[in-house]
Each structure stands twice: as C-alpha cells, then as structure tokens.
Image (cartoon, rainbow, N blue to C red; front, side, top):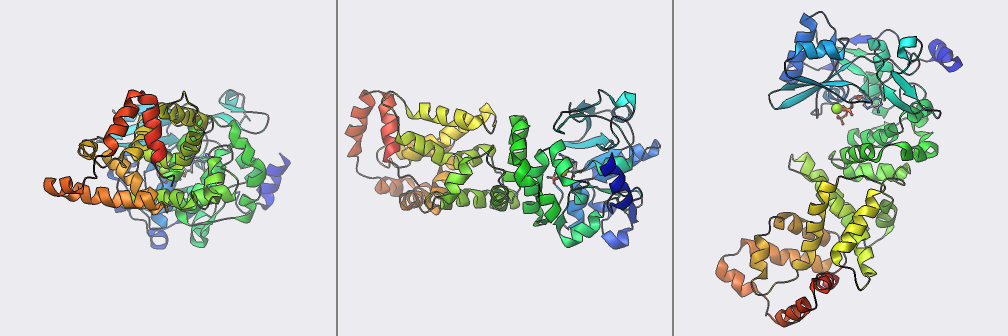
Length: 451
Ligand code: ATP
Ligand code: MG
C-alpha cells in the first residue's frame, strides 16, 4: 500500500496518461501489421471497442525487426470477442485468451487486465485473482483499464500499444525511450514483479539476448536472489519458455545470459558442466550457433534436435558406466528421465532424440550394405547434421566421418561402392549380434569418439 502510494507520487513510470506518439516519430505503418490483426482491430472498433496491437509486435516493429506474432488487446470481454468472430476459441486458465483464427493464422486477443496493485480491491475480484503467500500469481483474470493492462505487463518495451486506425503508439511506461536506449526495464518494483511470476526472469534473459538489450541495473539486481523461485513454476511452462529462448535465433547469447544470471540451475544444470568443459564446450556452441543460423534463415529447427545436442554428454557420460545388463537404450531412457525431472520436455520428442543418438555409432559402419541402408533411414539427415556438429565441436573422428558421408551421399553408385571400407568387421558384428542385441548396440556406440 505504502509502496503503491510512493510510486504514485514519485514513480516516473507509474503513468496514468499515456504518451501518444504519432507515426512521424515511431515509423510503424499500418501496412506492417498482419492483415488478420488489422481485420480484428477494425471489427472490434466498428463495434465500439478499443483495440490495439500490443506487446512483442509493436516492440519488434519499433526496432525494425520482423514480429513473430501479432497480439491484440481490447476492452471487449472474452465473451464479447467470441461473439464477434465466427472462428474464435477461448483458451487458457491462468490468463483467459481468445484465439481468433484467420486462414491458417491465429491471432491472440486478450481483454485488458488489471495490474497486481489494483487487484482484489472489489469483492468480485476475489477468486478471479489468487496470489500465494510468497507473491506468486496463481490465477489472473481480473479485467481492467488499458492503463492497468499496461502496468501488469513485464518490461517497458513490452507495454506499447499500437492503434492501426490512426497509427499512433500509446506509451504508458516510457517504453519507446527505453527501446532507443536499448534497455530492458521492468515495470514497477522488479522484486515484486519477479516474485509474482518468476518466469519473468527467464524472459529477461531471453529478451536481452534477442534484442541485444542491456538489462537495467535495478531490474537485474534481485534476479540472483530470486532465481530459486523458478522451482515453483510448473515444469511444462518452464519447458515452453526455455524453448522460446533456445529457438529464438539467439540461443547462444541467451544461454550465456541464463548462466550469467544463475537461472539455469533448476532447469538445465548440465549447462554448468558442458560450458566449463573444454572438450564439451565447442560442441554445445556448435549446436546453439547452428540452431541460431537455421532460425534466422527461416529453416526448421527442432526442439528434439536441440535437446539431443544439449543432453548428448549427459548420455555419453552415463554410457561410460554402463552396467553389464543394461542396453544403450536403457541409458538413453534413464538420461532423458533424469533430465525431464528438471525440464519437462514432452515424451513425444524422446523417439527422435534417441534415434539421433543411436545413429551416431552407425555412421562408423562404412562397409557392406550398411551405408546404403543408413542413407534410407528416415532420420538420416538429422543424424548426419548431428555428426557434422560433433565434427565442428572439435571431434576429429566425427569430422572425418562427416566428410566421408558427405561425399558418399553425393556420389554415384560405382563411386559409392569404391568408397566402402573392407568388410573385416562383418564377422565381429555377427558374433556380437549372436551375443544378443544388448551388447551389440552398446559396443558399437562405445567405439564412437566422445566429442
Ligand atoms: P515474442 O516476440 O517472443 O512473442 P512477446 O513480447 O510478444 O515476445 P509473449 O510471450 O508473446 O512475448 O507475450 C506478449 C506480451 O504479453 C508481452 O509483450 C508482455 O506485454 C505480456 N506478457 C507476456 N508474458 C508476461 C509475463 N509473464 N508477465 C507480464 N507480462 C507478460
Ligand atoms: Mg508474442
């Protein structure tokens, strides 16, 4: 209460009146807005509602970047929004959002929500907002004014509203000035805001990496102390947020930012080991760097491939101490389960991760019919890309193998046959296979060089 009063009196950011900035100053034109988002804001406006493009899209356009998605904020309630659009669905429990479908695209439309400070003031708010004893918001569906909606957003650059009708930007928290200074600044008291939702700490790391922004000193200050609060966050949400960071096109910088802030402990503790180890580090960097390139070039980058890379050494190390009665696949399962306790990546990714790992020793088998069969493997490309990155990660054997496979793939049949290695290993493998598949998969893997 006192804090709120102080902020009201002194806080330069507790603005009740937005700065309304004309297009001549911010340079965002209507044509840059997704046609579906334009259609939705027009429809809402025609019905007498306020409707703005908000959040990341405005921020990115201001920074001359291409927005990932276009979100809309309005004073229409979810029911009113749904009544206006034929293809619309209300989703979300923590926040109620309406998805409006438009062709193949989906636009998120949210009703202005109240900020933490003003919540719970009326009896009706009770039950709509739940806050735990330590400040964590559990449910947040209190509708509010646009000003309140701006105040409950995380960073000043994320609280900009663009009105496509007159091309103005509504700025309640000096977000445009911060964007010019390239500063990521929390709205309100950073400690309180991180306590309300610890995921904002991960978002701080992500946005500072993605935007190449400096985290404001006061915003950064409480992170080290509050980082353990991430344990309170459901692991599925942590996974989603981590993937946003890892597949943002700025994973290399983002992972370093995470580590610098000590935020990885409860999520990907393996980063400590792999980024400090001179043998592991080049490979992890190769994985992150390559993913960044792919994303920036608009090519596909899969969560499974990323996880296969980040967890490769966890798997390799577990394999070292393989007990006699365990197979390579047991170790894979065990590695994935152990990691999943921290980062709840979906089980549907396991198959691909395991296939990528299991293909690695098979690249060493370059005799007989095996290389031909391997080329037909549905995951050949992912496996080969992984091998290539192991090579880039200072594994000379993997680099040599990747070079051989590169040439083998490009060659005609007679050249391929000439490239095959003598089949001396054939009998050995057969004998191994007779000892049962358990040992054979392990042995061949062990033959691979840890990168
Ligand atoms: P991106 O480009 O990654 O989509 P974004 O800023 O659009 O970035 P979203 O996660 O799509 O991020 O969220 C949209 C907007 O919702 C944000 O810009 C911010 O205003 C608000 N927001 C999202 N998550 C939070 C949060 N945890 N706390 C406060 N505000 C949030
Ligand atoms: Mg967004």
